[in-house]
Image (tube, rainbow, N blue to C red; front, side, top):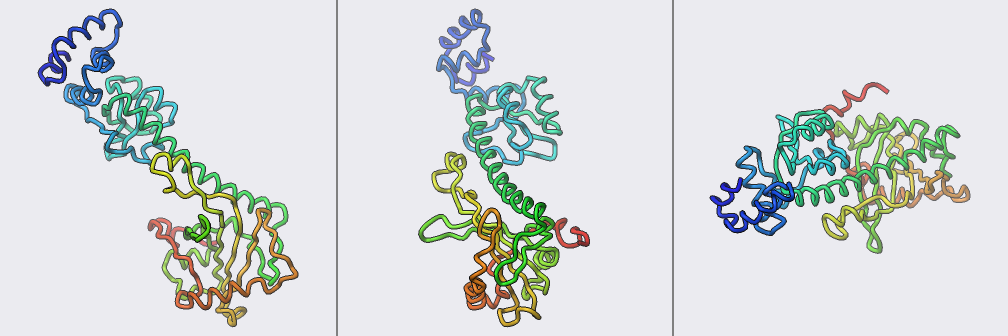
Length: 329
C-alpha cells in the first residue's frame, strides 16, 4: 500500500514513514492514519484502494444513492457497517462500503436486501454524510404515506361505525364502498395567499376503468370521483437536503369531496352532482343550506365543459394496473 501511494505521488516518503511508526503503536490501518495525519485526502485513498482491490469507486459527493436502493437496507445496518446502498442492477445491489473486504458485513447486507451485493468503495466520511441525507429524505416520504393512511383511517372508522356518513344537504350520499375505491390521480392546487391544497383522487370501479383506459370524455354514467384534501405544507427533512421551500407535504386534513355522474338525474347540472364533507369526522355542510353545491355546479359547467366538467387530470399507471387486471367488482 505504501509503495503504491508513493508511486501515485499522493504522499511523501517522510509522511509515510511517520504513519508507519504510528501504525506499530496504534494498530490502525495505514490508510486511516495517513488521512488522520492530513497526508492524503480520503477520496484519493479510496480511489487507490479501488484499483488495488478491483472494486468500483462510488463518488457520493457527485451521485446521490437511489431511493429504491436505500429502501432495501435498514438505516441501523447501514450505520453499523458504514455502508450505503447506491443502486440496483441486473447483477445485484451496489453498496458503497468503507471496507469492501468485510465478508461478514457483505453477507448481512445481502441477507437484508434479499439479493447479491456488488461491493464498491467510498470514504467513510462520504458514506456517513450520504446516510444522514438519504435516510432523512426517506423518512420524510414515510411521513407522507402515514398522513394518507391516517386520512384513510378516518374514513374507515366512520364507515365501520355507521355504514356511511350523513348525506350532503342536496341528497348526495356518502359512498358506502369508498374503501374499495382506487387511486386515479393526484393534484396540488396553489393559492395566492398560501400553500394551497394537496389532493389524492380516487374513483369507484366504473371511474377507475374509465380513467385507466382514457374513456373520460364523457365519463360513463355511474362514475364517482372523490378527492381527499389536505392543506399543503413543507417537509423540513426534504428541504434540508434539497433546499428551503422546494418540498411539498400534506398538512391538516380539510375535506372529502365527491362528484357522481348520472345523465338521467343531473342533466340540468352538466350530468354531475357534488358532495362535500369538510371535517375529519365527515360531517356534511349544514342542512339549512341545501343549495351549497350551486357554486360547484357553476364553476365546473362554466370552466371545463370541454372535459365533461372534470378539472382533474388522471395519472398514468403501469399496464399491469389497467382495468383488465383489476378484476370484476
